[in-house]
Amino acid sequence: MLEGLRVIEIEGLGPAPFAAMLLADLGAEVIVVHRKNGSPAPGMPDRSLIDRGKQSIELDLKDAGDVKLFRRLIARAEALIEGFRPGVMERLGLGPEDLKPLNPDLIYGRMTGWGQFGPRAQTAGHDLNYIGISGAAWYAANPGEPPFAPPTLVGDIGGGALYLAVGVLAGVLAARGGRGGCVVDAAIVDGSAHMMNLLMALAQGGGLSMQRGKSLLDGPHWSRCYASGCGGFVSVQCLEPKFYAEFLARLGLSEDPVFAAQFDPDAWPRQSAVLAGIFAAQPRSHWEAVFEGSDACVAPALDPLQSARDPHMKARGVWHDIDGALQAAPAPRFSTRPDATPGPVPARGEHGDAIRAWLEAEPTNVK
Image (tube, rainbow, N blue to C red; front, side, top):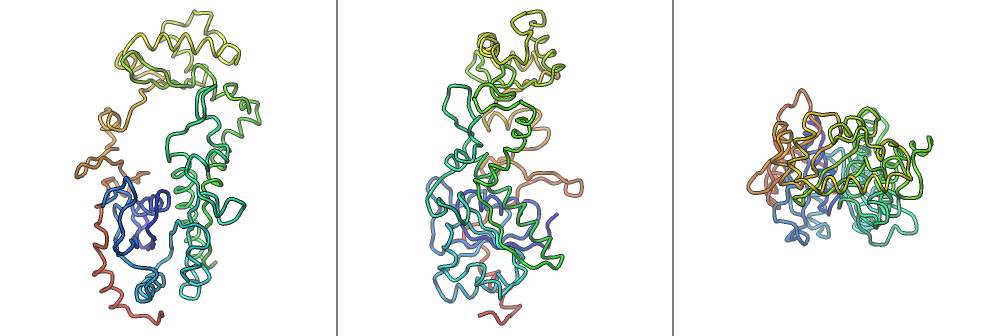
């Protein structure tokens, strides 16, 4: 869908390369500039699936010759993605104002945790810090437990990479419409706070409390995960009364007075405790069979390997095992692009010679 869009990505960590991967998954030409003679971050492989579908060239952005080549790439691109602390690219002489004469329509995508300005802008942080201060982690645990959201999903990916990708695409559309280039300041604190707006809409109707365990989606017995007898987990979230009625019917609890009050916060702790005992009495497979095909809004809570074996996920072809690396297929899906197979993962610098040859074949006056 994004064929014809060329994006230059500067090697980084987490959300910035994920945003570039998303664009590559959707058909954009993404050239990632890996550090010359660099090595992967701790815990990351030599060939990271986050680089799938991209071309790779190794450059030293402190070397004059490599900087000249980088600038020539920028002159032929519509967007740049970088994830350094504020000021790093400027110190390299490659900030937005430095590159604007080369490409006035360039969309300069900047990915940070704290943003390009503000009291914390120059300090270190990670996913949990950003979503902690933005409020996005507040409801990420059962009442009485410290907040802890799934690593990277709410902050780095949700509030960071996805907002950067949307921002870059919005900027590209504006530039193609004649409005010139711009800087996209994608901060995880901004994006993860923006993601809270659905919950804040609940607050307008009284469905959200700042006291944990008292909100419509935060404390109810019908909105949480339960441990099953085999050590696995089951997710329950039957918000609407008709779905709640189906849930109770499947458990044989329709006439139980304990569960008559669905929306009474004072009753939730006792109701949760009773359900915890019920679910712990049988293995997860039992509960999957009990709720199969129903509108009770119950599903197993799986790890990624288990998810890859789930019949629904297999039917949709969500998970792929490529060269021993389990990875999810590109999303979303398009009727005009039915193939959802992930692109190949390049070796560092694999396309360097081809990119240099392409640049030589299209000379410019870039210095």
